[in-house]
Image (cartoon, rainbow, N blue to C red):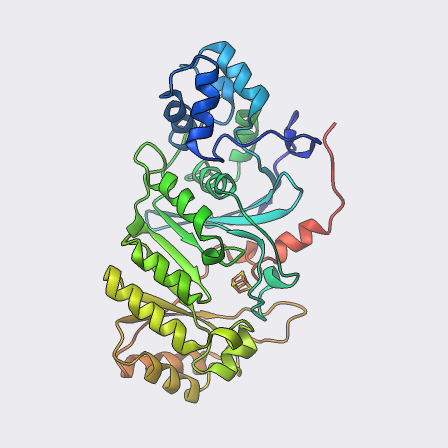
Length: 386
Ligand code: SF4
């Protein structure tokens, strides 16, 4: 099942002079703007709480603010700088959003609802510079980092969908034009695994996670946040030194350098050894077990020799391996692993005492190779609202 939201009348995102997002920029900027207008500084938290905690999607809905201030805010800022370009809902209530940014670029984010959890998977960059061979997001390289506001908007938009069915978009659309706030559910987890290399946009990501973790915001603590990386050792160490309880997931995909460089070209400069050393440092500093993600490409990295090599590589480490069986995609020369190969891989790792799981597929009918749907929507002609 797939649903497209109607375009929102009056949406400012395609005008020549878009307004800055209320969730973007340092709080000092908004505070100074408010003080200039004779407003108390505590209005910053009041405004942000409306959006982050209460599901308010228009300034006019901030009923405890003076009416003139609401009007002035609406003239200077946007609650959301992104617009929903495509909204797909799977039968298992996985939601995928394609969001159009103010510069007309597009990103995607996903809400996964499972066993009492509501997990937001967000993008951190437009495009990606890592060039993993199985991923459509990196085909044209990286265009730019997302701003803090664009990161938080993905979380807020997905949070506003928690518990909603496919019928909800009309209700959401009505809310966006100012009729009423949406009734919000609760996000429980964040995984930073969408388009882009999160650690290449670490400053903005950390600022967004502070807002996400605030009890007056989304209230999602560090232990419920997973940050994925192909492995930027210096940034992993910086993350470790923060002493926060984020969960680190390293996308390994191969047990030796020549094969990994074939799958993740940036490995040529980094090398697996430096990444593992940084991951060990992260574990030492935070006490949090590191997860190694491994996209299983049939015949390429799923043979017994690879499983044994991976087991040797991770021996003695408190590590968990997440296997992600590749699903075939038109135009890419990879195939799904055979069940027997996958099972053999799992058995070998377990025999060596390594914790391993196969990642469950959610929203399979709206699933596509990372970045594929976004590229498809980007190729469609631009529709400008009247
Ligand atoms: S898999 Fe992730 S890191 Fe690799 S190119 Fe795609 S978005 Fe970038």
